[in-house]
Length: 326
Image (cartoon, rainbow, N blue to C red; front, side, top):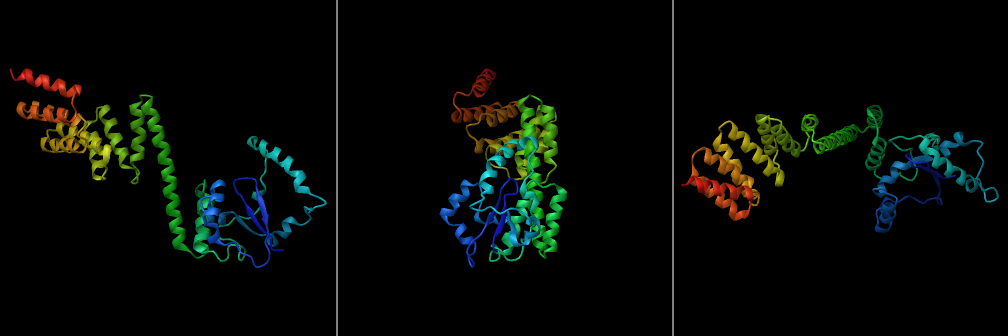
């Protein structure tokens, strides 16, 4: 009489679970190490995530199950049907399987009572909403938000909608980034740039996108655009190796429009961040040669060779500067 129905919505399994009267499903027990190991094997993120599988009490589904045969010890229907059902599951790839889980109601707010009644309702609603939103389209997502609003929790509806929107944007962004990488590998710089320009329209786009755009714009002859992209990355506070790349592109763009002080500042910061990268020294030395400051250029090249001994480009610059001295 107290049986509860749990449905694995994206699979083909529906479980009928009963316990002695007065027993409860304790959330704290689901979070202990032994339970966590079992949940990990089932690829369930947390004990609380089980709330998303709860369909409701069997009693509420009596009408739908009226006339069904009972599975009994003297008539074990399930045992004999299971092999047949497994064959049907195997055929599911051809689209012939109709899942039983689709016959059960699925709502964000669970039925009253039941095994989740002592769980924090905010956590239960959020877990169930996230499950419903996994793979949802816009119309399905709007129905989830409406259920939360109708249930009286507008702040949660707003929060869940914001999280879902961010995940969707992130998924689309990741797909575009992979497309751009594939085009770069294929040598299609123009195609990769076009895709990255789309990604860059998203305010949440990572700063690394601007670094890649700086490179591609420069490769395609857009020096000013390259500098603008590099400066965007720097303003975003990009760090590490990508910052060095942004500094070099920003420096080259500044040099192209005779903004020497800005170019020198970028190249020297790049040298400080990556002393083993010869490009910062090479670019600064070339600027000094153009300004006819051969003494300053030699000093930069020598500093570079101390940090990157044997670098071919710096050795060639050193030889060229030595010849210029005579």
